[in-house]
Length: 50
Image (cartoon, rainbow, N blue to C red; front, side, top):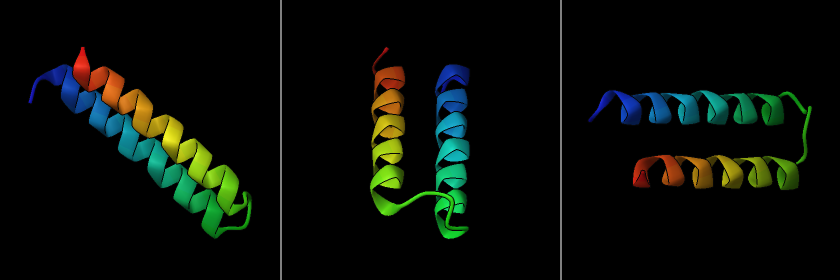
């Protein structure tokens, strides 16, 4: 993978970990967590398509 791809994947994983952590701690409900993950997935796809 290229450096840009590595960076995009790392950013996605960091963001996903944060969402899961906040959900587990009760800081957000499931709908919000899924919405944020969906946005992160779309962002990652866009980055990988460039």
